[in-house]
Image (cartoon, rainbow, N blue to C red; front, side, top):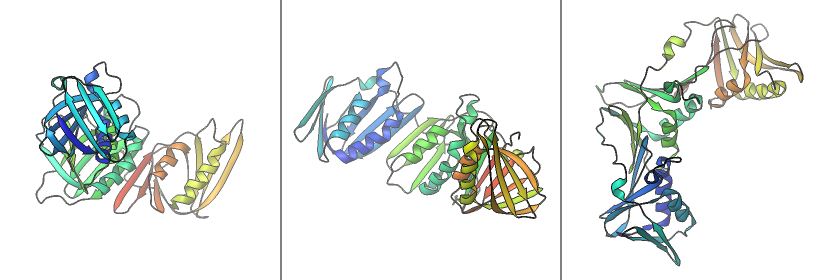
Length: 366
């Protein structure tokens, strides 16, 4: 095989497919990148047997062929080269790489041992604006469970119903729901699936020249297609918690507050909450204030009041300061509402914009 490609395009392509490299596999082939050339095109593939990534870019192909090289080594070489034409020429068990006066000779692996790219037969799919999907995943991804069990909680529940896209993530202590209006084909059937949170995050973090992402599902896989990149991951099977069933039907107390002001006060009050993450919130309907306070037996105590519109009954509740701050940070809006039933029921934070955001947090003892 022999081909030439630009250094910038090569480095970008390697950065995309590197997400699929196996890090701790005993199979060397899974730590490699498959290079395959045809007329005018260079295709790169990686697979760790859980996810598979394929990316294509333009190349000047003199002799078609395929080979597998170390992904880590190829990435390091591509990043170190100047922005110029890079020539690859391979025969047998070696691959020569030349760029200007730099020359490398790498050992290669047999491409016949490389895992076959999964066949893609989409049962359901939808094309979504990349910016909308990136915004939504960014709001809920941080709330997936970091524990491997149960597996469903390491995923993000994605549901398409009519013209609404809904993403849900939970670690059983808190839950985030993000919804956005989308353009769905008339008569299109809705669908839902559990997407591995890490895969969803990978996809939105990868560079792309496409303004849209097609998200689809096969019998046991989730497929993302954008531009010349195809990302395939195993779906997570199981029953995801019903977000609607966890939300209270009514609220005894509704609080509207400024997000930046509340976040700043929470950070200050939490300074003394070293051994006890609980922060007490006193919502006073008459004074139109929210008073935050924390107590540490060995550090002292702190309190601060912020303005808040309190409708209904005054109420007191304890919340984990770190988990609450993460929920507030996920909301870019200026104001949010907080609905409370009683001090023992979940606190429900809401932000309504083009992309709606809901954050449910279980209370703590104070």
